[in-house]
Length: 498
Image (cartoon, rainbow, N blue to C red; front, top):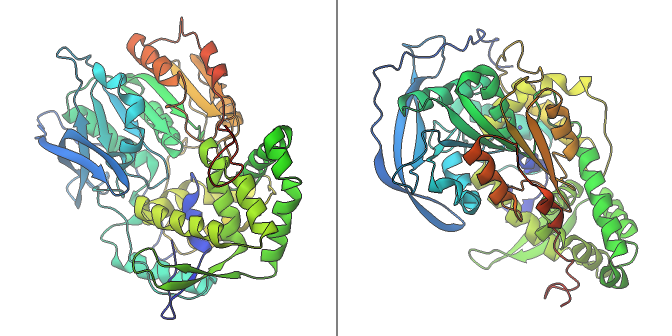
């Protein structure tokens, strides 16, 4: 997100913590026991609706509704909040009784919005099964924890604290009650009122943590699970990001050096990248770009953090990672920061529009930040500033309580399909291997050369459909996954060589 000032300047940097898969005014709250409502007689009325979100051309017909749940499960007669949900009915006239519940990442993404970008991967699955989308409490249409962004200059801790305090003062919510475990009890209430006995779950990125939490809390209602970009409950979100990002970037540079056309055009990429970082270590670079709305020249300060985080975000997918060598080369050889700054500005605007920052802070401050210093330090081009930023945020943001076993590995014999990208810069394949140790009926597919989130890659949609239709991993021939290949490198801004 950008920080506009009255002088028409923008300072890129601090708010990139929202890009993690990724983020104490009130006394500690009463522990949540997982109490749920008796919904035996509840009937949820759904109405025809159309799902859409800014920046995505896809529009989907669905049935939408609201379910009221207590904000505090320990006070069922207290304040109620509405959960926003949508059901995409199965195409078949004789649908299977077990739907697919879609849980997006973030934390902070809304299911009814995020699903649109992945809907193509679910077309086969939607033939026989309903797709159920529930905006997790604090996101989308479910009492979102959002705040107006103030006009502040610079990015020191005093300014951020002021923003957080203002945000908390404006929220009509208790941020301590927007954690994953509570949200997964919400999800089970939706399952109950919609009349489903067993469900299949797809979780992406942070959504895999949520899916595993649901599997722990309501195992009798889970038929199968797909985990895409795995966040195990015993893995701390934050401290390892720098290592994982560096490993992915080193692999990218190694692949570039081995690629004849890329190596001919861009030599010593790793050294060039470090040269850019060294220049930005001396201070922000001033860049003038035309405002995309009014066309007026706008001064933007490109910081080291914003440059590093833009590279990190580009490395999430092979399509955008294919641009990194060209962008690094252009920036260092031509000393031209305009292209990378324009991309950084676009990413900040996109992230600000798609993530609920308050819900993100509630999850990370409750579930991850208390364990930062129990995790080995990592190093890399992202350095430790992400952890430092969240420690600053979480010194102000109210911290909820989590169940005693929340961070323990989830043990289950339910069939689980785990998906990873070989060069995922935030949830590497090692995460899935960690989760598998306690999932006795599971397999792990690694997409070669891919990054973060891979359900839509190559033959994986077909494999996922077979897995959900049969409800078993037996007979799943996944050799086709090895034929998946990353995008070729851009040699110039017209694209790769023919």
